[in-house]
Length: 275
Image 1 (cartoon, rainbow, N blue to C red):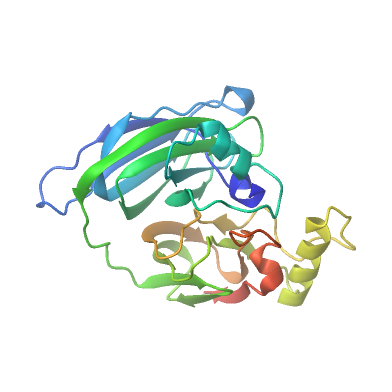
Image 2 (tube, rainbow, N blue to C red; image 1 turned 90 degrees about the vertical axis):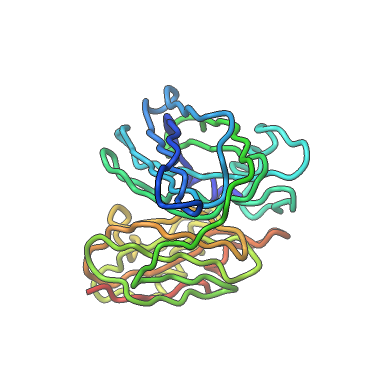
């Protein structure tokens, strides 16, 4: 499940209860990533009220970070979670690990957010970047009232093994990201270079995923893309995405729960033109 780990988070956290607006007003969970490399830290409350939660993630580090919530069923340690998250690519993902959402990749100095309903249970907040060891915190989510997600004009729906998009535009987008499938999914958006195709993307990913050397340079801009958090089947959230105009390859790098190749190798790559 290393693709999940490669898109994880780091941070420091404070919790503020939302006030006003009635029972369905979301709880605000404000998270800040601090430190770098081996000094990355994550600070979180021991418990929060569940239901509708607005998760705000401020990245105060010098590396892109994301904030991944992972819910576990039964008595499982953070070590067990990290063994799966950072383990062998293509390995099985046990049923006791239920992805809880969170905030996707956030550039240094920026704040991104996501609003979703969190079920009661035991969660781990996993903090990592491309450098250093992941930092973690345990959070117990208690009760809370589910609420309606904010209305949006843009959406991305993931299912086996495709994406459907609507209303994406350049600039700041509030996007409904929905996993309508049975497997875990996320979205990695890679800007296609002029003249490049999805077939070239699949070829490049296949070559690098097998541990070999690609036959040429990447057909996409490696630093100009975006990614969402990973969502379990049936879960949805509203999150913000900053998009530049151009053609994007939307890709899922997660494998099935039984293990196997990343979903991109099963055809889960879609082109979208952002204007």
